[in-house]
Image (cartoon, rainbow, N blue to C red; front, side, top):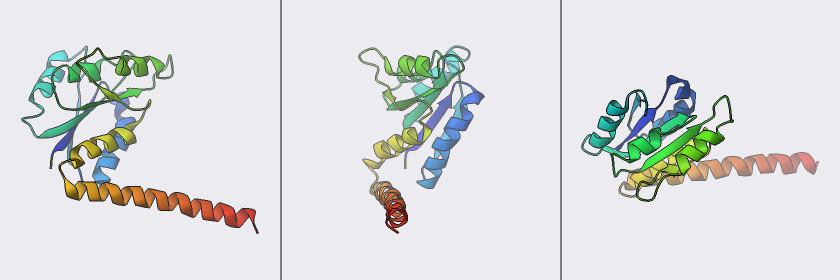
Length: 164
């Protein structure tokens, strides 16, 4: 199975990425995690991206706040799918990071999830990898069914409470 690369611009992004890692763990998807800054360690980030395919990655999650150039810097150096997570910052509640992540120039795409959207980034990686992995696709189907069942249980409880 292909693994997921996880890159964060700062250790302050770790709580968001723990949600992504937990999701990948639950789906039995291997991953590797690093702290590389687009601005402070650009060569390390570049080398990670350049070598990602040969190192067995199938998709990359890149999370950063504020200027949030990390996802774009990674995407510029690989043709693997890159999923950007804009992280909420102190000044603009993550809107700055969202715009920096989503507004990529033509030719260098970055799929962008919600601000602090670690779970959806992991699920999108899983769906990408599952295109060629039937067992993973079955695990994703089972997760969707379990999630739906939980919602229906909550609805049944609400209906029982309201109609007593």
